[in-house]
Amino acid sequence: REVSVLKSFNSPYIVRYIDFRVVDEEAWIVMEYCQRGSLGAYLRSGNRMPEPMIRDVAACCLMGLLYMHAKQVIHR
Image (tube, rainbow, N blue to C red; front, side, top):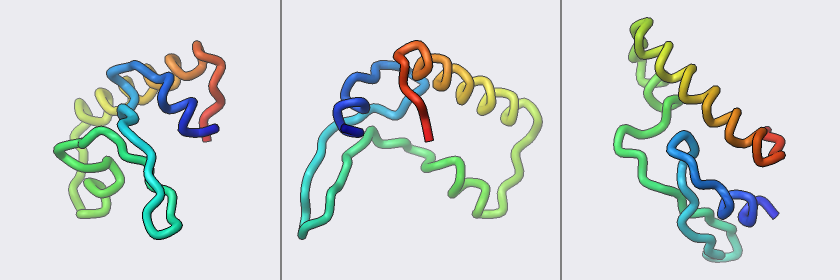
């Protein structure tokens, strides 16, 4: 069910779904490549975010949430 929801997303604020594979009995979801990695990895590396960057990240997250809510999708 999650894969079908991911397939339906088409927004610049949501990482794009590419494919689903089962490898050695593990389910893999292939997603769009994010050149700079995840926000979590960035923060774990000890980097600090300046206020303008925090503003931009928060705005993009909210736009992604608005998109998902408009499609009647509840996020985790």
